[in-house]
Length: 308
Image 1 (cartoon, rainbow, N blue to C red):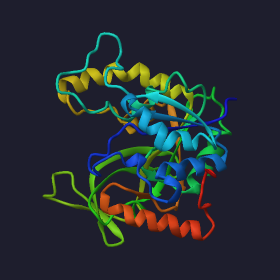
Image 2 (image 1 turned 60 degrees about the horizontal axis):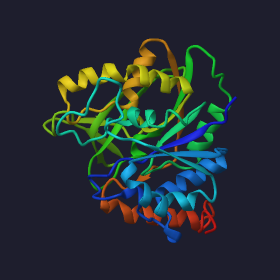
Image 3 (image 1 turned 90 degrees about the vertical axis):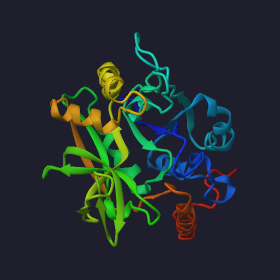
């Protein structure tokens, strides 16, 4: 069995934050949130990370992030580009936005040979999540049908910010611990210890308990997921080019939900009670810096993660 690898989605520009937040230092020695994720992944057992970035960012990314991390773990790069499309398709006029998270995973298709985990570059997930996903991927039969995938879930109350709205995938989980569906909520705001969501631009709000399980885009897949995504990408393009050619995206939960519905995959939900940290907005950064400093003071992390 191939050892699990980690795929980090880092091609986004962080428009709400206003810059390359993946590379922004949140601790001494130039360490960014990515550093802490890779450090947690390495001590969970991962030996290789694949960064999915834009080719135009490669030089800066290697200099500010990749070369430092490469001292502690094997690093490879894949490039998510708008023109990486199936034969017969072209980028529509006016399209600047990437094709979504499934497309980002497909950018690494030539580097993924077995089980793999997927995370965002700008989210702090916590050590427990990486242990859970690595242990799961290390014990699955790659030839099993239906395929056994996994998703780390978080408590919604642990993933909201005081500084604005967030997008989260609200999960419905069966009594057997398997994922039934993920519903994308693009505007969730903190409401005390709980939260609220609007689907109509703020005209009406639906309360969401802080204990609601949500997806933070932390998945564990087999190689078969890449093959399914590649096979279904043309179907997505046909629909999105007709409905929303400039902004439509092929999200991971869309493909996961389709495979669940067709009985081709089962997704084990791995609950984590770790607190999420991220820099969705610039105002979030001081809280992230303080939290990581506190965890370092308590011995969860060394001050210099990579010794450089």
